[in-house]
Length: 245
Image 1 (cartoon, rainbow, N blue to C red):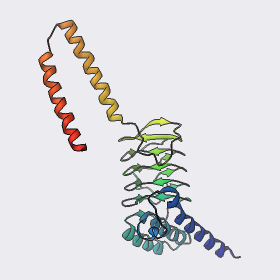
Image 2 (image 1 turned 45 degrees about the vertical axis):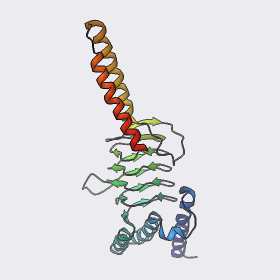
Image 3 (image 1 turned 45 degrees about the horizontal axis):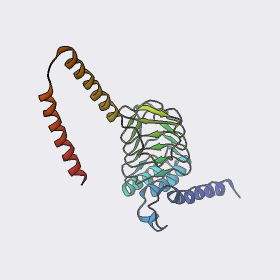
Image 4 (image 1 turned 120 degrees about the horizontal axis):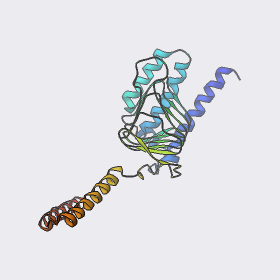
């Protein structure tokens, strides 16, 4: 077998493997037929494989044409010069952008609206490296020549501009590491700490401490104000419950 045939065989093996990935990552998949009509992320990866093979062989203009057609059809922009490993799954895919010097290792899960982008106009490595078995949540932006470590998770709508250590969870704008050595299933990307809730809990407790100090040491009666605040809070809870119903 010639070297060319070995490369072609390798490409087709990758494409065959890409078709099998949704069965492992998406419980909504009911039949193989759905892969052809309801999984733009799978087609975006497959089109990338073809464009990337041409890009490596020096057919850069043709690879960009194929990439452009794929972007039009799948609403997913993957530069043919980037490096994407095996069993990478882009769930729903719409709005995903992956830049030219991005490296995505094996078994990475990417949700819709993710940007793996650059922050520099200089040549060379200017896009992120996503290590294996990581999860990038919906709408997250990972920017610049940074590294998201192995087995890490990026929360939805987070903006990551610094390295994330392996086995970590990062959330926020800009993203901060809030968990380490996290062993949860990669699909449980919704199970992230609510840092806003934690801050509000702190502020409420701090206000209560200050109110008690004022009452105790200044002898100020705030009972009428407390009653007004309780009424406002009760109306808020009722409004929230009506929305849930």
